[in-house]
Image (tube, rainbow, N blue to C red; front, side, top):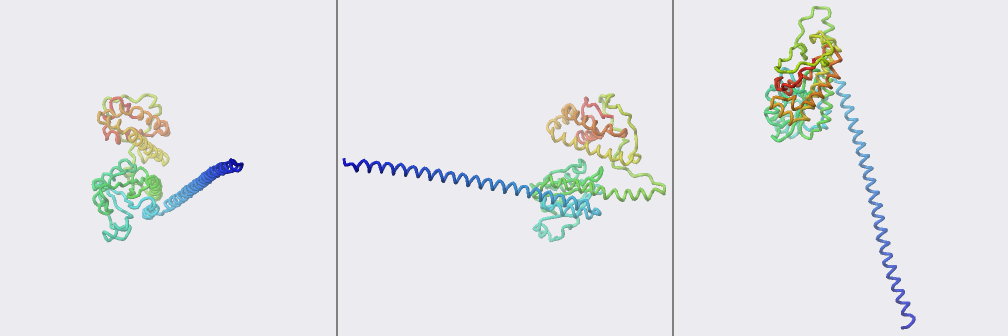
Length: 366
């Protein structure tokens, strides 16, 4: 073999080695570049998403602030209904505002899809006129009884045949009803369907209810001032009954001495000061919330206890916790306070039959 042969072999080996080395380097560079580009793109996307979320939150907060401001600035109920329907347009495709008077629901304002309006030839958002007895719609009756939002199916039995026909509901549609709670009563109902954002609507309807209460209280204050110089007629029945005795329940343990430590005073509603009336209304609302939460959190135990006629035995712990909360928050704030928690449990849990609470139920706090 000539001396040139080893040299040629060495060159070939070197070329192959460097060729493989260059390929490995190219692959490594491509992989590193791809990784860095991907990371940069992901970081950019995350940043854009975060910015978009932040901007959406700011926009939503501003929209809600403007909505609340508009509701609080309304001058009368008619304007309130119109504004409420307007500010909820982004949170429900179909909606209606119903006023409630003497167990009659009357549509004050409504929003329906264009195709539904075109189908019946009605273009106005507040027409056609619609009124029906609340007894024809189980969902409406439930809102009035519980003063809580209700989710129901869009059947004639739940929302009335008139509402189903007006909105063109299908039987499997879900509808939402929110109370417009003015003081101790439900003065109206906000009805929503299709792409409903329930938490936002609940907040706005609570604001509308408070505003409606303020609008109804202004004439009352003026009437009191005007009647100061003349003999006042006998006051009409009020929203809150304080003096009525609780139906007797056999075999109920007596109230313990520690729960009756503060002397109670009997006063009629119209004998209470404005501040005391507000305390009673707040206690009523607090009791309704406690009982509603208890019923939702212990649905199975509640049904079993009611079927057995021993609700307290099935829900002893949550009932005692609710009694303790109500005692601490409301019972000691006024000597005229009433155990609204007991009344609400009798009404909402026991269907107005105290015996269903069971023989171990300790009775009202006073």
